[in-house]
Image (tube, rainbow, N blue to C red; front, side, top):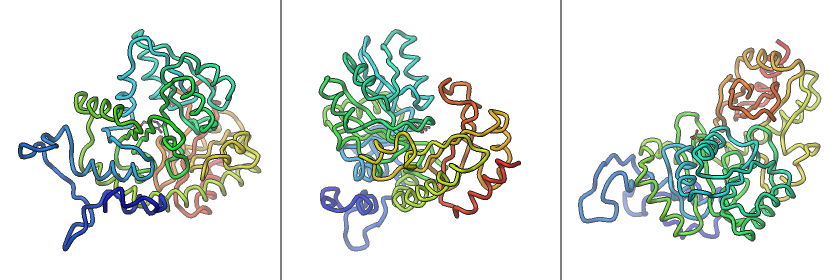
Amino acid sequence: MEHDSLDGLQVETRIVAAGRPARGEDAMINVPISLNSTYVAPGETGYGRYGNETWSALETGISAMEGGQTLVFASGMAALAAVFNLLPKGSVVTASMNGYTGTKMLLQELVDAERIELRLVDVSNTPAVVEALRGTNLFWLETPTNPAMEVADLPLLITEAKRLGAGVGVDNTFATALNQTPLALGADISMNSVSKFISGHTDIILGSLSISDSALFARLSTARKLQGAIPGAFECWLALRGLRTLSVRLQRSQENAMELATRFLSHPKISRVRYPGLPSDPHHAVAKSFMKGFGAIVCIEVEGGEEAAERAVQASRLVTFATSLGGVETLWERRHRWSAESPDVPKNLIRISVGIEDVEDIWSDINQALNA
Ligand SMILES: *Cc1c(COP(=O)(O)O)cnc(C)c1O
């Protein structure tokens, strides 16, 4: 099915239908894993670092929910590096203070090399962000933030940033395009760590950039060719297979997350719950104003400080003590076991990536671990 013919269909339908081979007698339903390092000349693709049928199918699938044109990279970090590498010397970048640690470390390297000036902001503090946006060349934001779970007023901030002449990129990994669509709100780039919800099975590393402007798309496409951070065909095939079920996985994970977050509110071993779906959450009103769902990440702060939090994550049996997120299985970790975690994040904060298991089973395991 051609991408154009999906217009008018709901996004849950588009991600199932997009990126398929053309219809015909005995046509394949799925694009195969294309293992080719070169192509017969002359032709458009030419060489295996320039293009691949399996990448294209995944890119068409991601574009069907994000909009724009998509490029898939070897990892989320490779996708970010391709964007940041475009920044001319002296660029001013405004970014999320409580963002993904890899993103912040990469930006800090550019500061140390005297390439950019960096302004870190609390993305939920709208007036402070708008102030920082004056003179900004690139606004790179994450919302909800990892792992503080702050929510930015995405429609307002994108509009303001564009009005002030800044380029805007959104790391859409936590929410996914099923919950918010940055390009539709006017952003230039929506980025995903495809390693997370899109692939959904904790078995691959991949990244993507969805880009609204065709000139910017061409520059980033050239960057991928020349920098060589290309995806593997097998990983793309798995990620596309994951994308087919994203809407049902996310729906179930979000329902579980909401149920757990609600129960955590009255748990005696938990001092604070962070989940934008909770009506009592400070970010609920903003999130509700533009997000279709609140995601599957819930953060808790444990009574008894970092030792109690560390004991809890090591005492789970069903829930796995591991980093990462967005898979079918529930994972949790105390974020400050990573030395690079922001000092603003409490030492006793545990991030939970809620999976699709039966919610009672997740609840009873977390409950026994907190009481262990
Ligand atoms: C994991 C993650 C990344 C980095 O992606 P990789 O695929 O691990 O390179 C970037 N941003 C966010 C929000 C992430 O969760």
